[in-house]
Length: 510
Image (cartoon, rainbow, N blue to C red):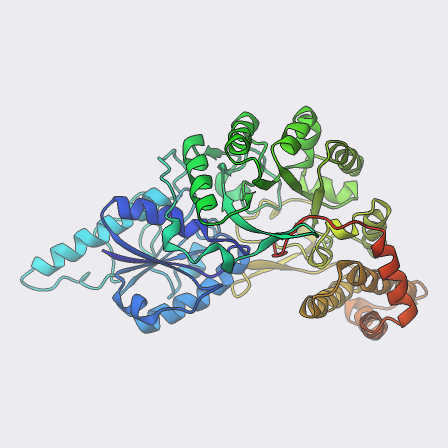
């Protein structure tokens, strides 16, 4: 079968979600082409030739883009079978199957995707030999039998989470590394390769989209496969490796063996990894080993610096733990780059300002991408937050268009501030502004929002409060975007005291 695998967005790196299934499909005898539409235009001829079109939906942004892509694919090739696969596929199967996709695959998708291609090829061959064309002669007209792990409109094949073999990803089918994000150390830029040593997660944080699909399960990629993939990435020009595991210390012995072997073979190769605060504390003795092996920085989902918010997420750490983790990472000669979900139903204006003060007090301004200060909690279908006492009072209906539940903050001033911060961050990104200056604008916004509302009289209803604060915050946005020369000079002077911090040039995480 002619198979076309498409990615719309995979966090600024080569889409492993194309290279991995491509290897399995090719091994099974299928003809596979891959396209990453974040860096190249859609080849319409490839779409028209494909019997099976797989659209990768590993995350929220990719899923929203994937819906629009599915509509375009259907218009170009009405008889192709469209399959959406990845983390976001199975929880949102009803939406994706509503006139867009013919099937969806979640969980460990390589095996079911191969089985789907085999079934389609078999059905196509049987149809070609029928004296009278069967009802399934078009690839999207229906399957004679649905493989396990494949969900269609007529049949729920469930989510496959079993163990499966891992093959060497087919990097040769992807655009070159120079088309993707790089690591900026402050002194130089390094080409990046992306690998995973494990999938799923042993932990079950309530707001994480991995939790409802994997339910605490972890799938380890064999060490030889990971190391051979690193070798082919180095041959393609990689000077730095990003380990995209949800938590690199879920299987700590496995991960340490990989980075030690990698460093022995490629001493100049650097890397980064994502590790929970909880694991940074538990495995503190191994942090120096990461530094010796070439770790430039660690990403950690701190999420909040208020214990009540962290408890509602069941993050497994406290605000004090965050401070301890920062000290441990610094003592090991490493850099911690925290990520946040600063706008939640439980975050007050004072809480938000306290987060900014925490970042400034710990000299983390250059450690945090400005977009992290604008993120509003996403609650996708199947989220483990749904039904919890903490979330229930604020949760609205599910919005098919945004693939998330609507929710409103009990204080409309917080929602207005989030909109204002998002606008400032977007403007700053368009100008490629220094993160220190953007932080100064955000802090000015937060302080203006607090000061503009401290004397707010008692008003009835969200609408009245929203109207009362919209104008002051709107003015704050304009003031923040037009900081005076003295304020700009002061911010940049503070920034000059903060050394450059290694970072990926792609800052989006979801």
